[in-house]
Image (cartoon, rainbow, N blue to C red):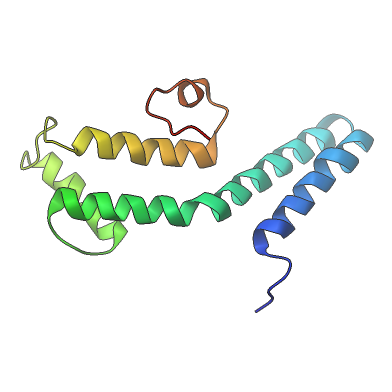
Length: 126
């Protein structure tokens, strides 16, 4: 395993090269695809940086909300099943806060400039 540079640093360096150097030399369809590639690398960089703490927070909220343990995937599946069956009502304490936090964490990685996210009163200040 390599210690330096990290995966995040590598992805960031490639994205910056595309944005700052390569895109200036490209036109038309190739320039468009370079922008798409740079955007994809930006998403990967944010995921490398933010996904683990977001998943840990989501896992902790789900364990508290459901009163049980399991993998993040299993707990999310259980939450969906319990909401679908009516066992967990929409007004259950903590449910809206959990769903809001999980959604904001996903949007922060995928589309952090989305206006609904940027202007959300529930978003953590950076």
